[in-house]
Length: 262
Length: 249
Image (tube, rainbow over all chains, first blue to last red; front, side, top):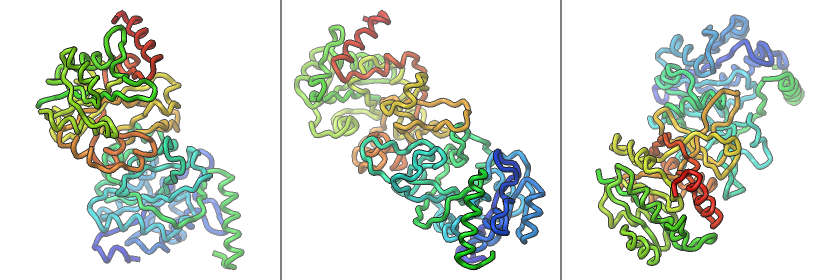
């Protein structure tokens, strides 16, 4: 699976951070979706992306570690007190991949992530020293959930640098009503050094206020390249029973269409 | 370092033509701004940059100096950039011509980081918002800053968005700017940017082009008075009342 890595000589690894506790659903990443757990769906998509030298599941509980080992994933048991996925990734990367150059953080609760999207956060870090970090966005059409605080909006500089992420409507449309909004997709790539710097600094004021870990990076003056993609995927992140029901329906439909039983 | 205060003052105004000359308790608005600016410790010189001879005349008759600039200037920044060509100075402070009660201390606060950090191109002021109604008012511009106090973004939306009931401060931007001479010329030549147009906020051009804009939290307590902007004859009445309430007439 060493496709991008070998061309540049940079070692790229993917880490899927997961935790057992969650406000609404306990062990949500182990929920069964058509015969596979949520986290195995995510893992399979990361494998399919063919973008990494190595892939790791970093979890705070042996229940997840055991499940991950059962489907053949590399694992690392982390501390239980991390306040965000990036801090968990930083610990795992430091311990397991001390020689990695690029670390990609893929959320464990998004089972339908499009594998073609994943390399988009790796390439800018391999091609240029200009960026400390990468993430993804898509243009959000009129009438989508842009006003919802759960839709995270981004404002970018003309060169694609992230200026700010917010749950508020940014930019505020004072003069041009037909502005298309830039919606964040929560996959991150980090240069190893910057990932460790992020974790060493602890949570920041804006991060805590908005509940958005990426704001810590901006407050530390990290340069985040926001790659835009037209690729789509069902945005189901497993947080509530409603999400699980939707996800199970989606998996059942896919299995019916393809006749596959994977 | 030679610090120059420049007050952009246009004659035309849809709501209040000749606004800079409007008397406030008997003293014109432009003279009040001029005198407040002159009181700042760091300021070596003060100029009014205007597009109209009547304003030049008024300024020279109270003993101030004025420079004529083109009536084509799209913004206060453009007017100051044009004026700076004929003024000797290293740091230029843009003092809004419609804020007659600006506290001279604020001008010094704005200039301070420019003196401390010779690489800093531009600085401005912010202050904590206390009135809940200001949070949702798009007329009140909010600012978020990084750990070094550099402006990350300015918006008419509420930023940061309150998500987790974590106690935090929301800052309002105060439209007072200091620029290094070279950067003022650079800035006036930079193309307009998307976010600048959408939000209608000139300072976003600086951010979008990747320059540092230091935001100083002002220690000035009476923001209601010092930040008061006059746009209409009713504002003049309100401003006069505010001076009287404070025994400042």
